[in-house]
Length: 174
Figure 1 (cartoon, rainbow, N blue to C red):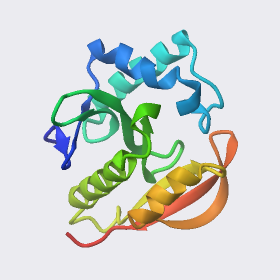
Figure 2: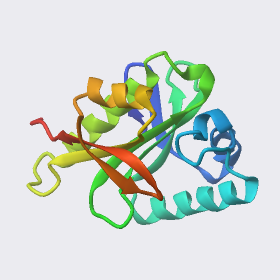
Figure 3: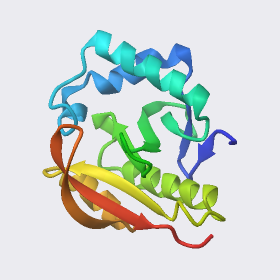
């Protein structure tokens, strides 16, 4: 896997052990985490989560939780996930942005970039022809992002201890 993964305005790359403060900026923010855990993540939980992400990246370098920066300035704006839905082999994407970067098209750009990455990664695979995403039932902004990049709502489902909207995107030909 070649990093960074780039779009027109963004650069996506794995977190390094020195990036915890950036990661914590996002996960401690109650606005950002509202639709995930309803509140900001406490420091110790964030450290455990960050350490787990670093370990998983070592095991699965083509998947993970990656930092997202503006390509031109290098400014950190949030992070994204490309991994499997827990207890499944269904690949999913996700994104978390600091509030000052909401409403500027970055979530859509991340979703499209990860979708393209997935399509390219599995271009010759007959098994991984779909990409999935989950949103909170009330998170209409993320639902709009997913639909804008070709995801279709499938069903309401119970994941990660809450009811979510379950989306799928068919893997288009490269």
